[in-house]
Length: 600
Image (tube, rainbow, N blue to C red):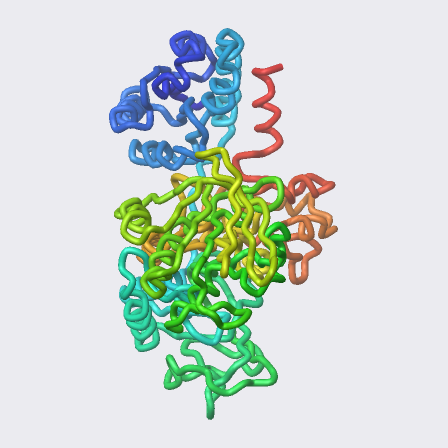
């Protein structure tokens, strides 16, 4: 019988505020197979981990149960601690007594304490039947794919390439730069955008480790982290070549492509797009954002009035040097900006804040006043969200130095009347209705996911949130990782972000890729599915059930086979198998039945 040690965490008052930890320890000490049990205020701390290592050495423990928070938080931490103490890490399990007991039973301390004792007992039974597993070693392709050629994609690509690894940068448009290319300048520093962007683009195009494919998109993904196979379709080709890409093969011919066409811009339209296949180790998704179409904002004219435009249209006016009304070319003397046009509107549009609007509206209002000094700028706002170094001062500068009139209130309607655009709203500070006869209205429309983001997510097997933005693995602990191993997120593909935050996250995603590439080989978790060949009837139901394409039929035996590198241990095959031939390592039927005994 295994000698199991149980370590109960107080988690400050998160657990101990509801559960009687001392009573739990005393009861668990009496449970069969428990050689040692104790508690500590913070088991995940260095002293808490040291306590585990000392107990393993002193009591000869060969199994560890930590009763603490969710395994998603610290399972890796405690398994590393157990390995350092000489215990196989897969004989270490977490009993979740915080989220599943303490937090949900805060008004029932007695019941919570009993439930904690039972829950820990079930995990003790699991450890009793656990196998001492070892991770699998897999080869690692040290080439990265970056999807999106905006500031996020270029930043990530440069960091990875500067570290000496090859990068394939795929951009859907004909040019690099993304939305930043459409900006006339940046807030805080109006003159920085063109030089900054052109310098970044030149660095990417001239980098010997970066292959750029424009007018291209990812059409298929196979494989797994460290060994992805990616197909990219390109509608352009370089004159005199087949847009040859180093280290890849064309899907049609299988010809090895040469490096001499590296970094050439596509110039000639190819009527039949070519497909290229790459072996990729890691992927960075940096597909950026779009703006909510004005046609969806019926209360603001639904895109019909020509003198109601969005923020990017106004940026093009600023870039052209002159600000003129689209309807008649006249210089607008009264311009109204409507913030939160489609954002923070759970009843009609998007409930979330688009984050960048407050600052670019202030920038545009200042730029307008610089070009039309005798003009009047109005800004309707719900509240100002100017988070960032120097941001609040910049907004105050628009008000004090440029006399931009900020009106706190939601705009109810925008409509045309007698050749002008009427903005009808309310000033909530004075409690009075406000009507402005404007020459031009600029809508700070909601930031939404880039067109095609959901389809790309399905191809990459990456989850999205309810709005279509790519979902991170954990909002605090894994903010640049997706739930699909080896695929990382950067920029507004995840959620609305401004340029500094986008660049920072792109650098973080690149660091994750470099951390992966620093390994000599990939390590695969062994807690995956396996097939009992004597029970398998070869029906193939598990093949269809597997969401990770980790199941195939054997080439000549009438049985199903697990592709270990692809399996994520989700258990779908176990449910689908009518013969119970499929099982998960360390989660067998025998274990589950044994875990039920302490509760029944």
